[in-house]
Image 1 (cartoon, rainbow, N blue to C red):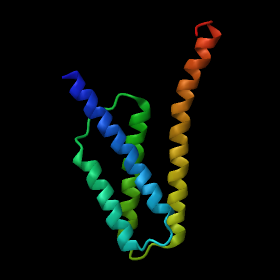
Image 2: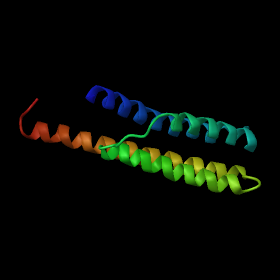
Image 3: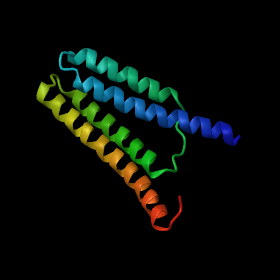
Length: 124
C-alpha cells in the first residue's frame, strides 16, 4: 500500500514538473500561432489531469502545485482575449522563468542548510 502511494506521489510530482517545463518551452516559441499554442497547452493539461492528484507533504511540491494552479489561471485569462500580443507571451514567459528560478532556489536553500549544518557539527 505504501509503495503504491509513493509511486503515485512520484508520478504526480514528475508530471507537475513536466507540465511547467512544457508550458515554458511553448512560451519560448515565438513563431507559434495562438490557436496552436492553446492546443498544445490543452494537451499538456490533459496529461496532468490524467494522473490522480495526491497529497503533497513537501513544501517544495506544494509550491510547485501552487505555481501550476496560478499559471493555469493566467493562461485561462489569456485565452479569453481575442489576440495575444508577443509582448504578453514574452511577459508571461519571463514571469514563469522567474517563478521557476525562485522555486529551485527555495529547494536548494533547504538542502544547502542541511549540508552546512552537518559540516559545523563534524558529521560527514
